[in-house]
Length: 82
Image 1 (tube, one colour):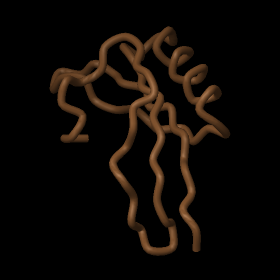
Image 2 (image 1 turned 135 degrees about the vertical axis):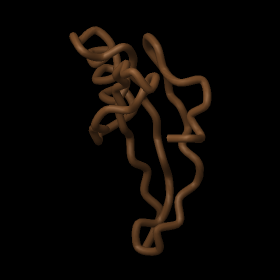
Image 3 (image 1 turned 45 degrees about the vertical axis):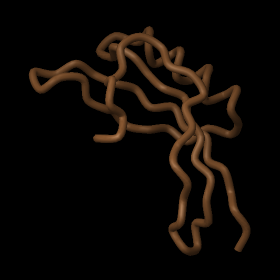
Image 4 (image 1 turned 90 degrees about the vertical axis):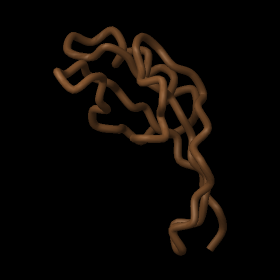
C-alpha cells in the first residue's frame, strides 16, 4: 500500500497535571486542520491547539514524525511526551 498523509487538529486542556491533549480530530486537508485548531483554541475549556500532519503506511503502521503546521494558544513545550 502507498503512503498516506493524515491532517489532524489536536486541542489542549489545562489540568492540575499541566496541559494535556484533548480528542484529536482528523481533517480533510491542511487548511481544514488549521481552521479547526484555531476554532478549538477559542472554545471554552480549551487553552490551545495544534494542526499537524503525519505521513506513513497504514498497512504496516510505519509513520514518520508528525509535522506541525501551526499552533494556537498554549500547547506543551515538549510534544514528544504526548
